Structures are given as structure tokens and as C-alpha cells.
Amino acid sequence: MLDKLFNKANMTLLFIVGLIFIGFGDSFLPKPLSTASFQTRTSINSFVIGMFPAWQPKTDPYKRTNDAVEGVK
Image (cartoon, rainbow, N blue to C red; front, side, top):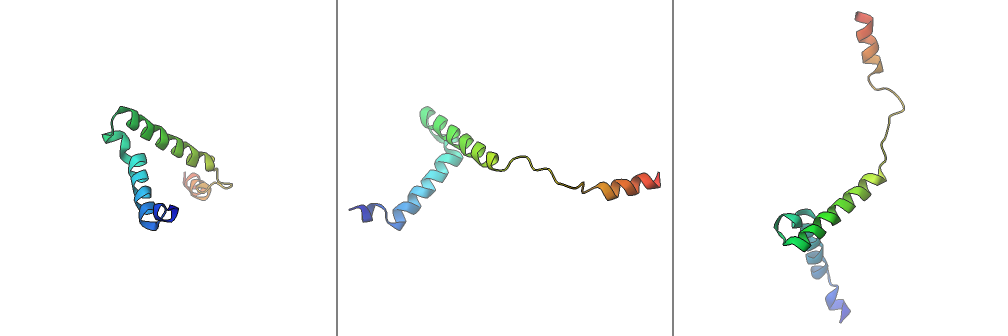
């Protein structure tokens, strides 16, 4: 019974429907579902952005160029 429910075709269809719901659901779904779609997308975005904190390079990539410009003046 469960093997028919969780076969590859059904899982692919469920994945595609989930992507459409998250990505575009707030533009065409009625009010309670559009709000859920927007909140889900916002939560996923916040989670992914939170995984990568603000990265600051250890070196100044433009230092050599700035020094050369200052040397010309």
C-alpha cells in the first residue's frame, strides 16, 4: 500500500507542486493559502541567508589599486 503512495512519480509530482506553491503561490492562490506560501518562502529565505553570515575578506582586494592611484597624484 505505502509503496504505491511513495513511488518515484508521486514524489516527483509532490516536489513540483511544492516548488510552485512556495515560489509562486502568493500570486494566484486564494487568501489563506497565499499567505502561507509567502510566509513559507520568507522563512526559507531567512534560514538560507542565516546559514551564510556576513563575510568580510581578510585582505583588501583593492589596496594595490588604491595605492597605485594615490602614488600618481
